[in-house]
Length: 66
Image 1: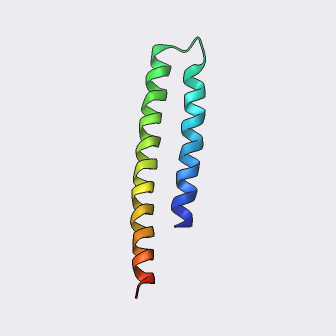
Image 2 (image 1 turned 90 degrees about the vertical axis):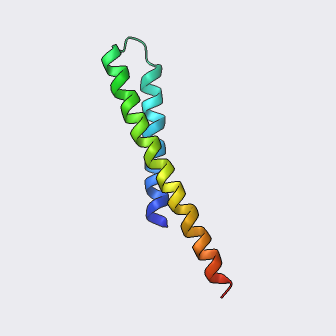
């Protein structure tokens, strides 16, 4: 769980940095497309990490009932 939380945080920081880069003026279209690609990859990773975390939390809660 801790590792997934760490990955989620790292990817969120990466998304924040990429969004800052997108806000910079003077970027070429090629640079913008590359940043968008990286943003999509990072947000997908965040989504998967959060889904896995949710499953682990549910499993952990269900184990407490036994």
